[in-house]
Amino acid sequence: MKTSLLCHSLLLALGLSASATALAQHDHSQHATQADKPKQTAADPHAGHAGHGDHAQMDHSQMHHDAMDHSGMDHGDMEHGSTDTREPDVDHSKMDHAGMDHESMDHSAHAASDMPREPIPALTDADRAAAFPVLHTHDMSHGQSIHSLVLFNRLEAWDADPGSGQAWEAQAWVGGDINRLWLRSEGERQRGSTESSNLEVLYGRSVSPWWDVVTGIRHDFTPGTSQTWAAFGVQGMAPYKFEVSATAYLGESAQVAAEVEVEYELLLTNRLILQPLVGLSFNSKDDPSRHVGSGLGKVEAGLRLRYELSNRRFAPYVGVTHERVFGRTADFHRAQGEGVRDTRLVAGIRFWF
Image (cartoon, rainbow, N blue to C red; front, side, top):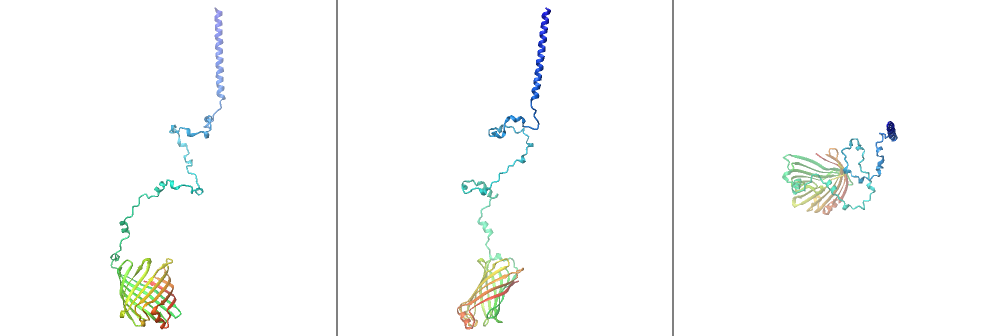
Protein backbone atom coordinates (compact mmCIF):
# COMPACT_ATOMS: atom_id res chain seq x y z
CA MET A 1 0.00 0.00 0.00
CA LYS A 2 2.77 2.45 0.93
CA THR A 3 4.67 1.39 -2.13
CA SER A 4 1.68 2.28 -4.39
CA LEU A 5 1.28 5.78 -2.88
CA LEU A 6 4.94 6.49 -3.35
CA CYS A 7 4.76 5.59 -7.02
CA HIS A 8 1.80 7.88 -7.59
CA SER A 9 3.56 10.80 -5.89
CA LEU A 10 6.65 10.29 -7.98
CA LEU A 11 4.66 10.31 -11.25
CA LEU A 12 2.81 13.52 -10.25
CA ALA A 13 6.07 15.32 -9.49
CA LEU A 14 7.54 14.32 -12.87
CA GLY A 15 4.43 15.59 -14.68
CA LEU A 16 4.55 18.99 -12.98
CA SER A 17 8.24 19.35 -13.75
CA ALA A 18 7.66 18.63 -17.45
CA SER A 19 4.82 21.18 -17.63
CA ALA A 20 6.97 23.95 -16.09
CA THR A 21 9.78 23.27 -18.57
CA ALA A 22 7.38 23.51 -21.55
CA LEU A 23 5.95 26.80 -20.34
CA ALA A 24 9.40 28.34 -19.92
CA GLN A 25 10.44 27.37 -23.46
CA HIS A 26 7.24 28.90 -24.90
CA ASP A 27 7.84 32.29 -23.21
CA HIS A 28 11.41 32.50 -24.50
CA SER A 29 10.28 31.74 -28.09
CA GLN A 30 7.77 34.63 -27.93
CA HIS A 31 10.44 37.08 -26.76
CA ALA A 32 12.76 35.97 -29.50
CA THR A 33 10.08 36.50 -32.11
CA GLN A 34 9.38 40.10 -30.88
CA ALA A 35 13.08 40.91 -30.79
CA ASP A 36 13.63 39.63 -34.34
CA LYS A 37 11.00 42.02 -35.84
CA PRO A 38 12.51 45.19 -37.56
CA LYS A 39 11.85 48.49 -35.82
CA GLN A 40 9.78 51.15 -37.74
CA THR A 41 11.12 54.70 -37.60
CA ALA A 42 8.84 57.73 -37.15
CA ALA A 43 10.60 59.52 -40.05
CA ASP A 44 8.95 57.26 -42.61
CA PRO A 45 5.16 57.76 -42.34
CA HIS A 46 4.54 55.55 -45.36
CA ALA A 47 6.50 52.55 -44.03
CA GLY A 48 3.29 50.81 -43.12
CA HIS A 49 2.07 51.21 -46.72
CA ALA A 50 4.97 49.37 -48.27
CA GLY A 51 2.78 46.50 -49.08
CA HIS A 52 0.26 48.59 -50.98
CA GLY A 53 2.40 48.98 -54.12
CA ASP A 54 3.22 52.04 -56.35
CA HIS A 55 0.53 54.78 -56.33
CA ALA A 56 1.65 56.01 -59.76
CA GLN A 57 0.38 52.77 -61.27
CA MET A 58 -2.97 52.90 -59.51
CA ASP A 59 -6.14 53.54 -61.59
CA HIS A 60 -7.91 56.28 -59.65
CA SER A 61 -10.77 56.37 -62.16
CA GLN A 62 -12.09 53.15 -60.65
CA MET A 63 -12.04 54.52 -57.10
CA HIS A 64 -15.32 55.69 -55.56
CA HIS A 65 -14.41 59.08 -54.15
CA ASP A 66 -18.03 59.88 -53.36
CA ALA A 67 -17.92 57.35 -50.55
CA MET A 68 -14.84 58.91 -48.98
CA ASP A 69 -15.35 60.93 -45.83
CA HIS A 70 -13.34 64.14 -46.26
CA SER A 71 -14.70 65.75 -43.11
CA GLY A 72 -12.02 64.05 -41.04
CA MET A 73 -9.18 65.26 -43.19
CA ASP A 74 -7.01 68.12 -41.95
CA HIS A 75 -6.83 70.62 -44.80
CA GLY A 76 -4.97 73.20 -42.74
CA ASP A 77 -1.63 71.53 -43.39
CA MET A 78 -2.16 71.35 -47.11
CA GLU A 79 -0.27 73.93 -49.26
CA HIS A 80 -3.03 74.98 -51.61
CA GLY A 81 -1.09 78.10 -52.72
CA SER A 82 1.60 75.98 -54.29
CA THR A 83 -0.87 74.41 -56.66
CA ASP A 84 -0.41 75.91 -60.17
CA THR A 85 -3.88 76.23 -61.72
CA ARG A 86 -2.80 78.45 -64.62
CA GLU A 87 -3.47 77.28 -68.11
CA PRO A 88 -0.39 76.38 -70.10
CA ASP A 89 0.90 79.02 -72.54
CA VAL A 90 -0.37 78.32 -76.02
CA ASP A 91 1.29 79.86 -79.09
CA HIS A 92 -1.70 80.69 -81.31
CA SER A 93 0.54 82.11 -84.04
CA LYS A 94 1.56 78.56 -85.02
CA MET A 95 -1.99 77.28 -85.15
CA ASP A 96 -3.62 76.72 -88.54
CA HIS A 97 -6.91 78.63 -88.40
CA ALA A 98 -7.65 78.08 -92.09
CA GLY A 99 -9.15 74.68 -91.47
CA MET A 100 -11.35 75.79 -88.59
CA ASP A 101 -15.07 76.17 -89.24
CA HIS A 102 -15.83 79.45 -87.50
CA GLU A 103 -19.45 79.46 -88.65
CA SER A 104 -20.23 76.37 -86.60
CA MET A 105 -18.61 77.79 -83.47
CA ASP A 106 -20.85 79.14 -80.73
CA HIS A 107 -20.03 82.83 -80.34
CA SER A 108 -23.05 83.62 -78.20
CA ALA A 109 -20.90 84.06 -75.09
CA HIS A 110 -18.70 86.62 -76.81
CA ALA A 111 -21.66 88.42 -78.35
CA ALA A 112 -23.28 88.72 -74.95
CA SER A 113 -20.14 90.26 -73.47
CA ASP A 114 -20.02 92.90 -76.24
CA MET A 115 -23.49 94.15 -75.50
CA PRO A 116 -23.76 97.17 -73.16
CA ARG A 117 -25.03 96.52 -69.69
CA GLU A 118 -27.78 99.08 -70.27
CA PRO A 119 -29.34 98.80 -73.76
CA ILE A 120 -29.15 101.98 -75.87
CA PRO A 121 -32.63 103.13 -76.86
CA ALA A 122 -33.45 103.47 -80.53
CA LEU A 123 -33.11 106.94 -82.08
CA THR A 124 -36.47 108.62 -82.65
CA ASP A 125 -37.65 111.62 -84.67
CA ALA A 126 -38.07 113.55 -81.44
CA ASP A 127 -34.40 112.99 -80.61
CA ARG A 128 -33.35 114.24 -84.03
CA ALA A 129 -35.57 117.32 -83.73
CA ALA A 130 -34.10 118.14 -80.32
CA ALA A 131 -30.51 117.73 -81.57
CA PHE A 132 -31.01 119.72 -84.79
CA PRO A 133 -33.67 122.38 -84.19
CA VAL A 134 -34.87 124.60 -87.01
CA LEU A 135 -33.14 127.98 -86.79
CA HIS A 136 -35.41 130.98 -87.15
CA THR A 137 -34.17 134.47 -87.85
CA HIS A 138 -35.74 135.93 -84.73
CA ASP A 139 -33.91 133.34 -82.62
CA MET A 140 -30.57 134.69 -83.85
CA SER A 141 -31.02 137.99 -82.02
CA HIS A 142 -29.27 137.86 -78.66
CA GLY A 143 -30.50 141.03 -77.03
CA GLN A 144 -30.05 144.55 -78.37
CA SER A 145 -26.25 144.71 -78.08
CA ILE A 146 -24.37 146.61 -80.77
CA HIS A 147 -21.13 145.26 -82.24
CA SER A 148 -18.73 146.45 -84.92
CA LEU A 149 -15.85 145.20 -87.06
CA VAL A 150 -13.35 146.80 -89.41
CA LEU A 151 -11.47 144.49 -91.79
CA PHE A 152 -8.80 145.36 -94.33
CA ASN A 153 -8.88 142.16 -96.34
CA ARG A 154 -6.19 143.40 -98.74
CA LEU A 155 -3.74 146.24 -98.32
CA GLU A 156 -0.93 145.45 -100.71
CA ALA A 157 1.74 146.82 -103.04
CA TRP A 158 3.62 145.55 -106.07
CA ASP A 159 6.37 146.54 -108.47
CA ALA A 160 5.39 145.44 -111.98
CA ASP A 161 6.56 146.28 -115.49
CA PRO A 162 4.25 149.27 -116.04
CA GLY A 163 5.26 150.63 -112.64
CA SER A 164 4.67 150.22 -108.93
CA GLY A 165 1.21 150.35 -107.47
CA GLN A 166 -0.97 149.82 -104.44
CA ALA A 167 -4.45 148.40 -103.89
CA TRP A 168 -6.90 148.02 -101.05
CA GLU A 169 -10.14 146.23 -100.23
CA ALA A 170 -11.85 146.95 -96.92
CA GLN A 171 -15.20 146.50 -95.26
CA ALA A 172 -16.77 147.47 -91.94
CA TRP A 173 -20.07 146.91 -90.22
CA VAL A 174 -21.88 148.03 -87.09
CA GLY A 175 -25.13 146.66 -85.64
CA GLY A 176 -26.63 143.57 -84.08
CA ASP A 177 -27.16 140.00 -85.18
CA ILE A 178 -30.00 140.80 -87.60
CA ASN A 179 -29.64 144.37 -88.80
CA ARG A 180 -26.30 145.94 -89.72
CA LEU A 181 -24.90 148.96 -91.49
CA TRP A 182 -22.18 147.98 -93.96
CA LEU A 183 -19.36 150.03 -95.50
CA ARG A 184 -17.33 148.59 -98.37
CA SER A 185 -14.53 150.18 -100.35
CA GLU A 186 -11.88 149.16 -102.86
CA GLY A 187 -9.47 150.95 -105.13
CA GLU A 188 -6.14 150.92 -106.95
CA ARG A 189 -3.29 153.32 -107.55
CA GLN A 190 -0.61 153.13 -110.25
CA ARG A 191 2.29 155.40 -111.11
CA GLY A 192 1.30 157.83 -108.39
CA SER A 193 -2.33 158.36 -109.46
CA THR A 194 -5.61 156.74 -108.42
CA GLU A 195 -6.88 154.51 -111.17
CA SER A 196 -10.13 153.47 -109.48
CA SER A 197 -11.87 153.94 -106.15
CA ASN A 198 -15.39 153.52 -104.80
CA LEU A 199 -17.37 153.50 -101.56
CA GLU A 200 -20.56 151.59 -100.74
CA VAL A 201 -23.00 152.30 -97.92
CA LEU A 202 -25.40 149.41 -97.43
CA TYR A 203 -28.10 148.19 -95.08
CA GLY A 204 -27.85 144.47 -94.40
CA ARG A 205 -30.39 142.13 -92.90
CA SER A 206 -29.81 138.51 -92.02
CA VAL A 207 -32.25 136.20 -93.79
CA SER A 208 -30.64 132.91 -92.71
CA PRO A 209 -27.82 131.79 -90.41
CA TRP A 210 -25.37 132.11 -93.33
CA TRP A 211 -26.71 134.81 -95.66
CA ASP A 212 -27.40 138.55 -95.58
CA VAL A 213 -29.36 140.66 -98.05
CA VAL A 214 -27.84 144.12 -98.62
CA THR A 215 -29.20 147.22 -100.30
CA GLY A 216 -27.90 150.78 -100.52
CA ILE A 217 -25.81 153.06 -102.72
CA ARG A 218 -22.38 153.01 -104.31
CA HIS A 219 -20.36 155.98 -105.42
CA ASP A 220 -17.47 155.75 -107.92
CA PHE A 221 -14.89 158.50 -107.55
CA THR A 222 -12.67 157.37 -110.42
CA PRO A 223 -12.11 156.62 -113.24
CA GLY A 224 -13.74 159.30 -115.33
CA THR A 225 -16.48 161.37 -113.84
CA SER A 226 -17.93 160.34 -110.50
CA GLN A 227 -21.11 158.29 -110.63
CA THR A 228 -23.65 157.03 -108.07
CA TRP A 229 -25.37 153.65 -108.27
CA ALA A 230 -28.21 151.93 -106.46
CA ALA A 231 -27.01 148.60 -105.08
CA PHE A 232 -28.79 145.38 -104.24
CA GLY A 233 -27.18 142.02 -103.48
CA VAL A 234 -26.47 139.10 -101.20
CA GLN A 235 -23.39 138.05 -99.25
CA GLY A 236 -22.57 135.15 -97.00
CA MET A 237 -21.06 131.70 -96.83
CA ALA A 238 -21.95 129.04 -99.38
CA PRO A 239 -21.62 125.30 -98.74
CA TYR A 240 -18.05 124.09 -98.19
CA LYS A 241 -17.21 127.50 -96.63
CA PHE A 242 -16.93 129.56 -99.81
CA GLU A 243 -17.41 133.24 -99.02
CA VAL A 244 -19.58 134.76 -101.75
CA SER A 245 -20.53 138.36 -102.52
CA ALA A 246 -22.82 139.16 -105.48
CA THR A 247 -24.12 142.69 -106.04
CA ALA A 248 -26.07 144.31 -108.88
CA TYR A 249 -25.90 148.06 -109.55
CA LEU A 250 -28.33 150.37 -111.33
CA GLY A 251 -26.76 153.62 -112.55
CA GLU A 252 -27.59 156.65 -114.64
CA SER A 253 -29.16 156.24 -118.07
CA ALA A 254 -30.35 152.74 -117.11
CA GLN A 255 -26.78 151.49 -116.87
CA VAL A 256 -26.62 148.08 -115.16
CA ALA A 257 -23.51 146.47 -113.74
CA ALA A 258 -22.80 143.44 -111.59
CA GLU A 259 -19.85 142.12 -109.60
CA VAL A 260 -19.30 138.65 -108.17
CA GLU A 261 -16.47 137.67 -105.84
CA VAL A 262 -15.71 134.24 -104.33
CA GLU A 263 -13.06 133.57 -101.68
CA TYR A 264 -11.92 130.49 -99.83
CA GLU A 265 -9.57 130.00 -96.89
CA LEU A 266 -7.49 126.83 -96.79
CA LEU A 267 -5.79 126.23 -93.44
CA LEU A 268 -2.38 124.70 -94.05
CA THR A 269 -1.61 125.01 -90.34
CA ASN A 270 -3.37 126.69 -87.47
CA ARG A 271 -1.87 130.06 -88.52
CA LEU A 272 -0.68 129.58 -92.10
CA ILE A 273 -3.64 130.18 -94.44
CA LEU A 274 -3.86 130.02 -98.23
CA GLN A 275 -6.57 132.28 -99.70
CA PRO A 276 -7.63 131.89 -103.34
CA LEU A 277 -9.92 134.54 -104.85
CA VAL A 278 -11.87 134.93 -108.10
CA GLY A 279 -13.72 138.10 -109.14
CA LEU A 280 -15.82 138.93 -112.23
CA SER A 281 -17.47 142.16 -113.43
CA PHE A 282 -20.23 142.70 -116.02
CA ASN A 283 -21.71 145.78 -117.72
CA SER A 284 -24.83 146.25 -119.82
CA LYS A 285 -23.61 149.25 -121.84
CA ASP A 286 -20.41 150.80 -123.09
CA ASP A 287 -18.99 153.64 -121.01
CA PRO A 288 -15.95 155.13 -122.79
CA SER A 289 -15.29 157.64 -120.01
CA ARG A 290 -14.62 154.78 -117.62
CA HIS A 291 -13.01 152.49 -120.21
CA VAL A 292 -15.74 149.91 -119.69
CA GLY A 293 -17.52 147.97 -122.42
CA SER A 294 -20.64 145.84 -122.48
CA GLY A 295 -20.60 142.19 -121.53
CA LEU A 296 -17.96 140.47 -119.43
CA GLY A 297 -15.51 143.21 -118.53
CA LYS A 298 -12.78 141.85 -116.24
CA VAL A 299 -11.76 138.62 -114.54
CA GLU A 300 -9.36 138.67 -111.61
CA ALA A 301 -7.79 135.62 -109.92
CA GLY A 302 -5.45 135.74 -106.97
CA LEU A 303 -3.67 133.44 -104.57
CA ARG A 304 -2.36 134.83 -101.27
CA LEU A 305 -0.53 133.06 -98.45
CA ARG A 306 -0.72 134.75 -95.07
CA TYR A 307 0.56 134.02 -91.58
CA GLU A 308 -1.54 135.16 -88.64
CA LEU A 309 0.46 136.48 -85.71
CA SER A 310 -0.13 135.64 -82.06
CA ASN A 311 -3.19 137.87 -81.64
CA ARG A 312 -4.50 136.95 -85.14
CA ARG A 313 -5.41 140.58 -85.81
CA PHE A 314 -2.43 141.12 -88.12
CA ALA A 315 -1.37 138.78 -90.89
CA PRO A 316 1.36 139.62 -93.42
CA TYR A 317 1.01 137.86 -96.74
CA VAL A 318 2.55 137.35 -100.17
CA GLY A 319 0.76 136.35 -103.31
CA VAL A 320 0.26 136.49 -107.04
CA THR A 321 -2.64 138.02 -108.99
CA HIS A 322 -3.69 137.89 -112.61
CA GLU A 323 -6.16 140.20 -114.35
CA ARG A 324 -7.58 140.08 -117.85
CA VAL A 325 -10.15 142.22 -119.63
CA PHE A 326 -12.49 140.95 -122.34
CA GLY A 327 -14.74 142.15 -125.15
CA ARG A 328 -15.39 145.84 -125.57
CA THR A 329 -13.47 146.60 -122.40
CA ALA A 330 -10.36 145.07 -123.97
CA ASP A 331 -10.88 147.29 -127.02
CA PHE A 332 -10.92 150.41 -124.87
CA HIS A 333 -7.67 149.33 -123.17
CA ARG A 334 -5.95 148.74 -126.49
CA ALA A 335 -7.06 152.15 -127.71
CA GLN A 336 -5.40 153.73 -124.68
CA GLY A 337 -2.19 151.76 -125.26
CA GLU A 338 -2.75 149.52 -122.26
CA GLY A 339 -2.45 145.75 -122.10
CA VAL A 340 -5.38 143.40 -121.73
CA ARG A 341 -3.74 141.19 -119.11
CA ASP A 342 -1.49 141.77 -116.13
CA THR A 343 0.26 139.46 -113.65
CA ARG A 344 1.68 140.80 -110.39
CA LEU A 345 3.61 139.57 -107.39
CA VAL A 346 2.14 141.32 -104.36
CA ALA A 347 2.98 141.67 -100.69
CA GLY A 348 0.76 143.18 -98.06
CA ILE A 349 -0.94 142.90 -94.72
CA ARG A 350 -4.39 141.84 -93.61
CA PHE A 351 -5.69 143.20 -90.31
CA TRP A 352 -8.90 143.76 -88.43
CA PHE A 353 -10.10 145.46 -85.26
